[in-house]
Length: 530
Image 1 (cartoon, rainbow, N blue to C red):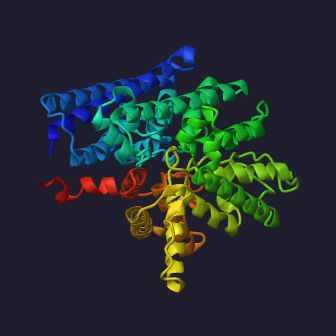
Image 2: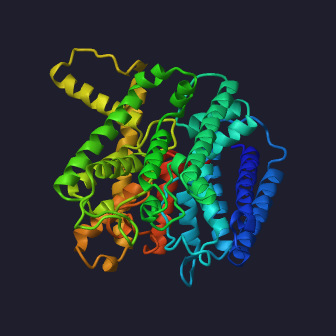
């Protein structure tokens, strides 16, 4: 194992994190809306975090100064999960050094900070913070850093580093691991170009969305933070009520803002390579892509069912995540508003963004089951959304159909492909194994948190409600969705959980973001042996 080279890459990641923290500092200045009375702890916390990250990075670079530049498969498999682990630890420092308060009079603990950092970088969007709108609890600089972690983790840390530094053939290995094999052929130069294309599309979409929100009356700070969260499909908001906050602002056109957020969440869940072809005026490539068509069909179908069932069960009589809902029970929501709310929530959960405009966990059981299903499926390969990915689900369904046909037509040979993409047996086996492993892991972690969490939070509903809430939150953590059901739902947060559960969920977010296998590798003693 080439440890010196691993140390070198970890050092670069540490400097990358320090650079991100540096961008959060200006928001403490009065010209950017900061108040030094409130921003002083945040600025000091960020400076200390930057110095710590630089010190850690310098130490790692010194340890790897004479490294052999040959990076074999084992080293590349180690660098990606170790880089993410280091990034999470460093991202937690601003919360601790600034004295950010989880609630009034309660500073964030180490477990709280690691949970928030894991949620940010993995673009899960779950939080332990109870009041985002009080600058005496959470400075604006820390709020911006919180959104910045979404931006840095959205495409993947290694994608950014390959786009900036190249790394030669090493970059090719990193891109294959980080993107799950998207664009699996080509030279190292092709991979750097691929990384640059992804990063450019990502940054341009963020800039466009921020500009549109600003034009609609949203403040520059809130526009940028929400653009980071939306395109990264993360879900961190600067408001306690998430996107539902805009519905209570009489001076803003909330429906239009929600439609803008829907559009960019949808784009975040699309394979960015297809968006590149769209820019090249080759839309046929997108429309012929079977994964994109399936992604679109699932969203349309599930939205229709949620909308119709919501009308039947009166889910839309009242809605809103603020303390002053837009509608009361005496005034029913218009069908167009109800359809928009249904579409918003379906897109938010399927793209694993986790933004909310309503307490969706109070909707009917049909809608809740569909939310669990689309949250499990997630977005397209090559986008920023989490989940199992539409392509994997398509491949598993294809495999299931082939196996069923073998029962009554054992001699028939079928071409194994999705669209024009041929599938070999190893791909089919790998996808089915991954999905099976994912289901088993979610079940085991749910069992673990059921043991760890006392039933005191579930005084109403008893054990069935407790099981549903913890299962939904565990599935949400592994698929990087964010909110769960019940006490962990749209208007709630994860601060009520025990410290051990927060650590378990932090690892679940980390494992889910890296497709399970990579995090388990670095904790396997056999992996480090010669």
